[in-house]
Length: 77
View 1 (cartoon, rainbow, N blue to C red):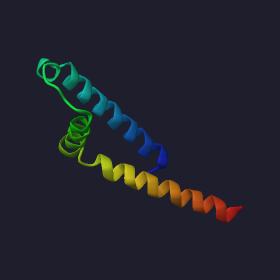
View 2 (spheres, rainbow, N blue to C red):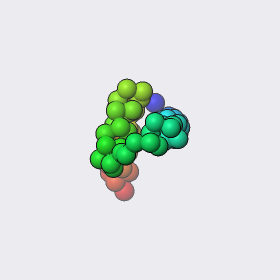
View 3 (spheres, rainbow, N blue to C red):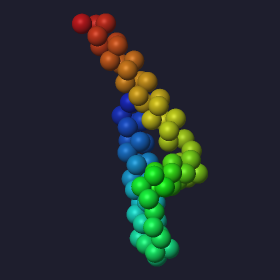
View 4 (tube, helix red, strand yellow):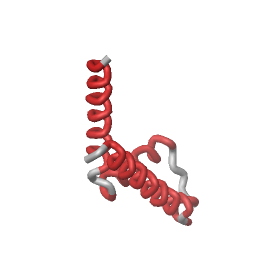
């Protein structure tokens, strides 16, 4: 997969996560409960784990590809 395709997929998934979080935050049950920031982080992690299982792996692969490409560029110089 091309880097640009990977980045587009990452962007799409971030937008999807943003929509999920927005829906959650705007829900009446969320508004009526106190959620400390560490619980919010856990909630985001759980959302990614349940709804976007492939996302962390994709980001990891993208980061690895970027490092590889940087190494290739440095070798050419």
